[in-house]
Length: 265
Image (cartoon, rainbow, N blue to C red; front, side, top):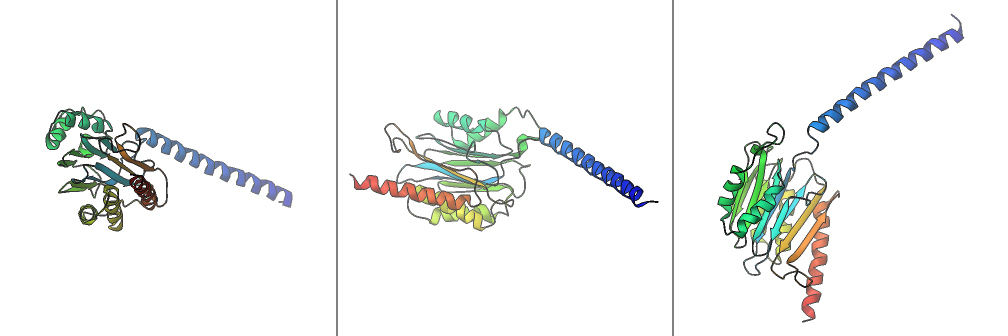
């Protein structure tokens, strides 16, 4: 066999190998796409905190997760009404539904039951009602929280006076326990108390997948910067290696602005 013939055979073998690798890659890519179409959005695995400040009347929540832009749907709030966090195998409509029932003066625990009993569970195979997790707090700080039996481990919640911490795919119960303790033991503006809870939850292990985004929402009647504005703070960190640290930076900027406004009056 001549050198030229060997070269031709080696070239053909190389081409066949490349073709086989590309074929396998295409199959894997198609399978991944098909799986993604079946379940295009992952559960909103996260930990969140709802809190009420009895001295100021402010109410709000904060959240952190290993998903992009977690604030885009988890937190809902309305001044003189309440605040809601809806997560895990999430139905975003739970937020607006809960506020609607709270406006009518229905207690948070009853609102939980009403929403669950009226959930049509349209996709039980991959978006089951049994995986829902949501917390509802009214304008007086009264709170009720539900964690579904199929929310991803570790999943659970803990309620304290004027506070509720809840999460799923967490390192363990210490996450929510430390969040409640941090909220109760921290002084100052509600934003710093909510932030301290997130930091404590992360220090206890947080979301086992890591961090990516965080958000905070606080409301009070006419508590915002501008005229007829009930939003005290609406902050979102959509994509960051250190979303809680970035959220702290934004909270500190907001605090300095509040101090400047106070000095004018």
